[in-house]
Image (tube, rainbow, N blue to C red; front, top):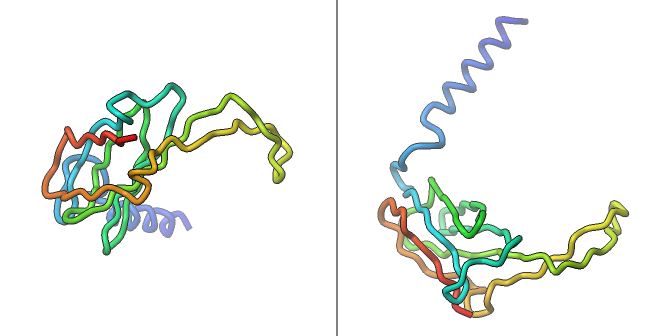
Length: 133
């Protein structure tokens, strides 16, 4: 039994060799940057995500403190979709769990609700997005 477990672990680790971290290779690029709205930082407590989508697939990364890091962004013509919410200060009772839940509201401007076209050709540490209001 122990030999089978060791073999399974070795196989799993060999599949993951080269996964994650570091610089990008192949059909992906490493993008990093800031997300602002109308030139202003995201409000305190706001959080969200960016989804980079191509016809071949998509990758979603979190936005934390107005910054994102996408180490495996698809190369080529990409559409970037944003989901950013901020707390309203109100709570409501969850119908599913019965617990109080903080209410949030989307702050993504309507002008970018259908995404932003981006041409991804190489790694960039300054791929910033200013979402016009």
